[in-house]
Length: 275
Figure 1 (cartoon, rainbow, N blue to C red):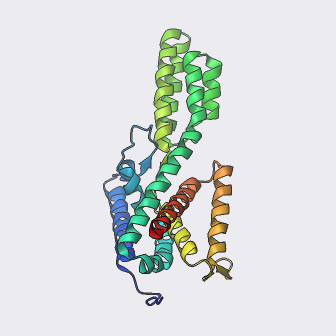
Figure 2: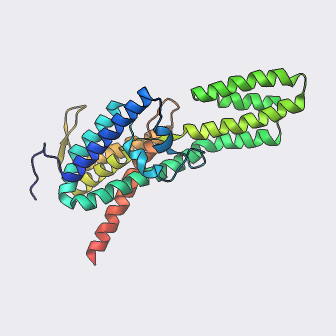
Figure 3: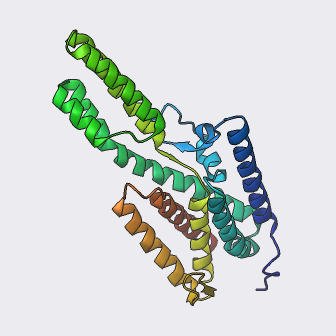
């Protein structure tokens, strides 16, 4: 099999890079000049969030949080996607790209569920027994996680303190409304953007198609067989997902989801080709 120049873009890869660049530019211009947050409408929100929409399973893969996020994703699409597209053709490559992107979003939804489950249980416990102690414990465990939640919390504290010594029933009613609104903000905060799930799917496809092809790493600059590169990335993402650090904003489970759905799709295609 012969490949074109390493600097030549294939049609699907070229169009994906152009679309991602255009979307990033639009996001930057609209956000900085008109204060329109397109992530609010097109980023993938948790399915229990009021901001969730099914179209987000596709659109989230074209949004990026920073230029470096965009650059490294598109660099990977260019480096590995071009070769995969040359092997499969543009149509099959695009089907694979979108299946892995959507699959990564589905797996991330499961991760969101487990991330939010403890808070939902804590709020349900408070609503069934609204004591000051359980309210304080809830706020301490799930303190402000965004500017909007911080504002809501401060407004509630002022209202609650004014009511608690004069009208306890009104204070409890205010607290019930607060925890429900606070939970919704918590759901809204669980959002994922980026093409990384599809990128990890492409990386897996490259490793399965050319397991012994050597790839030069950037850091450290050593050659490594593609199959070991894929395994290494998979292990790192698994550890990152299990650790679930509060300071880590990387969607590790989405990355693994892209690899999982990529693996299943390739196995499906291989099994169909036998008959």
